[in-house]
Amino acid sequence: MTNTAPKDSSKTPARALVIDDHPLFCDALTLTLQSIADFQDIRAAGTLGEALTELAQDGGFGLIVLDLNLPDVNGLDGLLRLRNAAPKTAILVASSMADNTMIAHALKSGADGFVPKHSQRAVFRRAVEAVTTGRTFVPDGYIDPTGGQPLDAGGALARLATLTNQQARILQLICEGKLNKQIAYHLSIAETTVKAHVTAIMRKLGVHSRTQAVLVAQEARFDSPAEDRFSRNLPSDT
Image 1 (cartoon, rainbow, N blue to C red):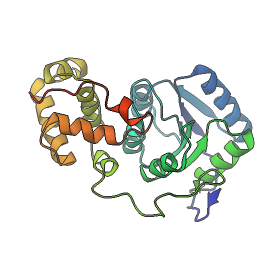
Image 2: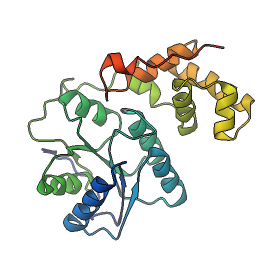
Image 3: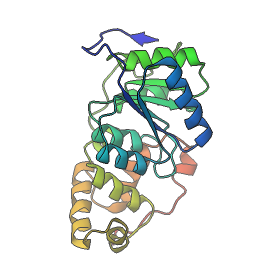
């Protein structure tokens, strides 16, 4: 299903970036993109980190195809960070998590379209044609469970979307239970810089502790049942 209201773009972008940690799917999707559109260059990345590096070093991609399940990011976190890094690039989510709620949250988090991974080539063709010409693509039968309402300004996704990529990376490490000293070592920055980022993160998220920040981040993760999402150890506030 395609929503009309195209922008001024009418050509298939020359370059595409596929982000998925399954090599076979990356290869298959690359072949699919080559067969349905005239891409001159198609790159692949197995993690969000690799994708962000690719964008920083060699930007100019007209299309990004993103899987929500990646080794270094959970749920919609990666989409939010990717949208911040590539604000003008068409982003098509290709995921096996294709229920109406997930699709709605992906679109409200910055995706231009959503296509289930199991879709036929013809569906991918329609999806690519739509998002690369400024239109939104959703699967047939999709019903917006939010009734078309905008993302709640006070919701977890909206607050996480205000973080810079560095802040989002630090929040991810906090979610993994890392202390400031460990985060500083991991990112090769000063511990005082980490502390400043943590303060900014908590201010943007409207929380007063690291534990509360983790809970906000986990609200935005829809890739596993709630009991799995909250099963990891919460970090201390010291």
